[in-house]
Length: 633
Ligand code: M6R
Image (tube, rainbow, N blue to C red; front, side, top):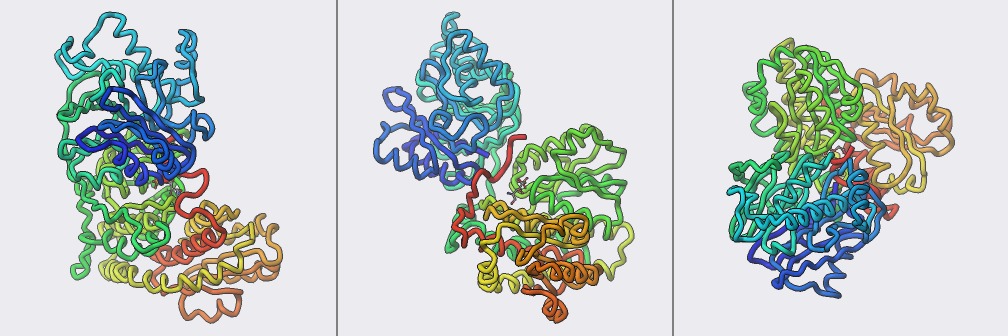
């Protein structure tokens, strides 16, 4: 949610920043801006409403002076509408300090009022401007007090802050701030200095060859360097062309740990696909293969989860699992909930992270909390994890983005290894989250009640899933034709039972978020308790009606919908003639054992949503009002 890119080094800063912003555009895309300090020490700023392309065009039409240091931002509006004034960077009252910010300054109103009383004039409605003004105000106060430690000659404290008034001003300002932030700050009085800080919003420093690229996401760094430093909460850095120092907001110097980025640039490229979402739907077979790699020993019939070794005792002793996440991750958690109780026979609850945190939850002894998140940055999920751990639970992450906040705050975890997911609509992360939770269930099941032959049967079925998804994907163009018949309908229902109930929710979420069609997902049986009133002639009702324990019941529900004129699109098991007779349209998927069926039944639903959005002319990868990761509550 919002993206930051900052640069100091030998190259021209502007192209690096703009290219970086393009890579981060999926994090927020309502407006964007850059601030650069040129060779004369002048601060130049440009902002534009709309996509990065609009900013880029503006920079081409009217060039900014060359610079080797700069900050930039792509915005997802929280405070204040989508206007140029509200776009970042924001300036202090003297126009010498520029700030870009991700997160929310919760006490911005109080800070703003205080600064306004001192005569400062604000130009935007944003919380970020309050921070920029505050940093500028502190800077001026320090200057007035005769503290010249901002000059290169001064060094009052002998540590990192001693030689930068900007750093000291940022530190002092951050002490006044409540909320979350990832920030990058430059100042024309210190034209070779970049200050960055984080609390609750990710920031990564890329350490290149005589250059540093700071970004809120590795996507903007990977083409420049694979050497990175992940800042933790309350950490900051002062970066100059030839050096950098990491410190805390309390000015305690810390030794940076340089890590290696494993992901390659190609993983972020669109390749031959029209949209990232389609690319990611088609990547699922390989994503799942990567997710399974090294974790399933087929011949020995064993599940090996190296990432959980540290908490093995806690897992086996666990009396209860809490699975938590938001959106698609929550749906994967629901699949996990079914599978944990069904296979591992351990009491499990799947809960919205946002609800868990605030309901004063009871966390008994021997509880394990599993935080599920593609980005690893979803603030609700992060806080739910913190709440559970604070109350004594063991925290485990099921996360895609390596080094993300959730991954770093858990006791142990399993990465999805799905590769970067750029499309705002989550697809491959969902299937890999389900696979990971299935692996966790099997890992526990075998240590408890599951016999070797059942484990072997499940492993064999699991290893067949990628090839079965490949077969299902072959129907993409037939699914497009089918979807075209319904694309003007504004209300859809998605129904499923058991393992397919979360899939029904996921199908509805996918359709609404990218095609803006109203869709509801629910347990098929629930329909009779009210929603059946909605069904009228021609209303598309998608049933997940594969062969399994609740098949007969779903068949009855299909009859009920048909009797009321609903148009039934059934996701059915290959070769099921009965469903063909009952439904208006059928999409067949290969047979697999019940706990694994969501991995196949979700594929046609992803494709329906994708094709519907394209046919309706929607921006599939950047749907309106959304952003890839939601780092505000
Ligand atoms: O990064 P996370 O998995 O934590 O994100 C959770 C949700 O915000 C995310 O799944 C969202 O619902 C997607 N847009 C769904 O496609």
